[in-house]
Amino acid sequence: MIELKKLSINDGLDVYNMLQDIPLDENGYHNSANGITYEEYKEWLVKKEKDANQVGIIDGWRVPQTTFVLYEDGVPVGYGSIRHFLTDALREVGGHIGYCISPLYRKKGYGKEILKRLIIEARAMGIKDILVTTNLDNYASQKVIIANGGKEIDRSTEHIHFWIYE
Ligand SMILES: CC(C)(COP(=O)(O)OP(=O)(O)OC[C@H]1O[C@@H](n2cnc3c(N)ncnc32)[C@H](O)[C@@H]1OP(=O)(O)O)[C@@H](O)C(=O)NCCC(=O)NCCS
Image 1 (cartoon, rainbow, N blue to C red):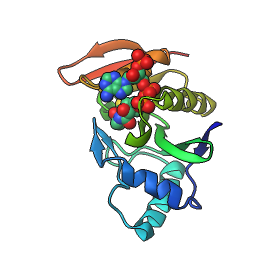
Image 2 (cartoon, rainbow, N blue to C red; image 1 turned 90 degrees about the horizontal axis):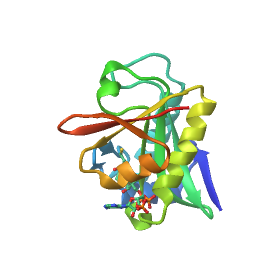
Image 3 (tube, protein in one colour; image 1 turned 180 degrees about the horizontal axis):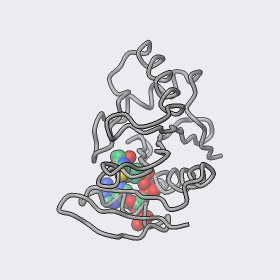
């Protein structure tokens, strides 16, 4: 059974281990929990909770964002975040939604699944049209976005902008 659950301050070792399997930086996706101790991870969970409840913008990028974990039969396989709104900087790179799947579970359809479920959550949060950006050479993510109804609107030398319209 596949489930998408909000990250919780009560999450434990299973989520911690998944976060250690995901590289620190990959295709512009920054996994800030990579390489931290379990105690630091507990603080990281608290920070993520604060990020979800934050009001307003910090430094043009850090808008309120809610993080979710994708589980298959109770095993965490990936995670992703929804930014509650865009800034000019996020319109360039970042968009509303970011996600990653643990390298142990890739090419099994979980990428498409997590974006599908994050779109449902974003709509429930009142985000109608959703911007997702990818690096030009991130073919896997481009397939994930197109499979979820993403329309390429423009591309620069580095990034592609997709909108998923309601
Ligand atoms: C992008 C990512 C989420 C895809 O996850 P995934 O679970 O492998 O995705 P899926 O299994 O749903 O595969 C989607 C499609 O991409 C293809 N694919 C997967 N990995 C691929 C790769 N390395 N190169 C080319 N195609 C790839 C799959 O075969 C599938 O193709 P299909 O639609 O023809 O069947 C994962 O590679 C990842 O976490 N990457 C690092 C973080 C990242 O890039 N996040 C996105 C930032 S926008």
